[in-house]
Length: 424
Image (cartoon, rainbow, N blue to C red; front, top):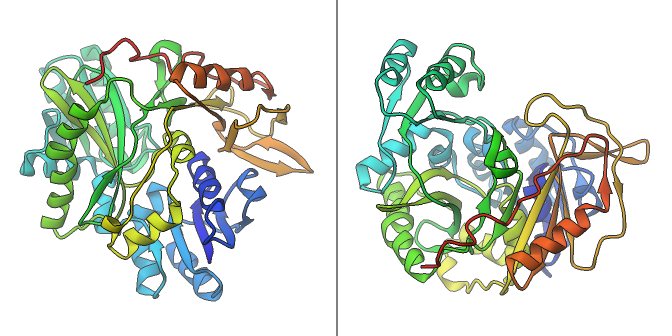
């Protein structure tokens, strides 16, 4: 079959790489894709947030048998609904289910209503009311822009002055655009974090192996929040006992809650979790594969990804046995100088001979005058597998040294945190 993948980041490159392994897949198209994706797929230069235009294109290209919608924006805009209404087979949640990520206020209210463990919170759409609250609430505090903000709409404020500045930046200065029209002010929780993703067709929930993201731009979790500077899998502290707790108290209750609300979720549901002194709690939901979590998860997947996608579309996920490789995987993100604020594009990228089994996931790249150049803040993900996280980490960093571009920077500590926490 011929498959269209929507998106242009490292996540989408990892998805394309996985689909390339499927004997079911003949040809892949990617909208818009990047230089790495372009080596495996035919690129389509179309704005994937223009859902009518995408629908028209898929209508006109009758050779497309299946579409995978990977990024959050087109999901929130209803691209899945648009394609389904035109009679096309598509992977991803509909608009009314994607709201679980598109609105922080919705997701917090859902968890409160159905007793899903999360941090205490208040929601504000008026600046003065929000400011008055942060003038008196417990500190530290977490501020979250209600809408989508490219993974950057979260501020952890350690002082009252930071909280006051954050409320102003979100609600008055529009640092995150319209995403900050409404703000969730949340209790600050402490503990190790884990990304726990699951496949679901609305009837069955099948968890993936876990991973740990690194959101801060600098070593030691310092600096500004980013879309993710690297990740590793599996989470060292996440064992069978924890998985049982998460499935019973968080994953299945979320699936049932969405069904009860008439918002059946079909696709990949991402649970951002924290292990607190009171048990596992939800920090955030995403309505799709994470980035860069996907870059360490899919290389470990043994089952045909296309089989899983189709089973979810047809609501027969219970019939598919999903298997994973043993061992670990580490991804180190190479970023442009200045990211996540101002950065330059168009820097030529030099890549040496990488070790066997090391996978590059292109994020912000393109071809210009026959040369590979940077085209985004996060440029490449260097992914390596090993018997342990430490061995995978060593292999990833060894191969990072074979890649260069002007002002390239990356964290040196991916895969170190949480290794001393006992597994439960």
